[in-house]
Image (cartoon, rainbow, N blue to C red):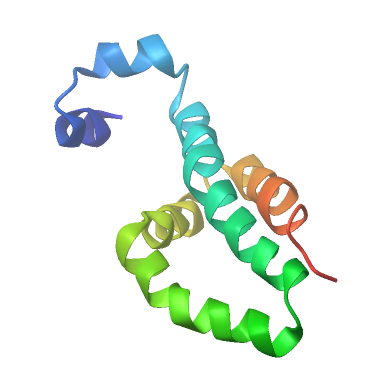
Length: 102
């Protein structure tokens, strides 16, 4: 939380006014970053034929990676999954499970 506070220019105490723990902060980031990004891409897959969906995805993926914090969020999630295993489960249920095309 200290690193996050320093990067955002907030005090550590201020972060705890909004998030009870690092775990709650990560859950909020998943809700704000991962779910909207995957919601957009899943709409393409549902609304288009498979070739059209792939074309849209491949055309937009570089922009999504450059402009969103999703890759950084995933790195943090993977590195902290051992410490916070329920975050990995939360991500799996809320993001992967919700937007799985299988």
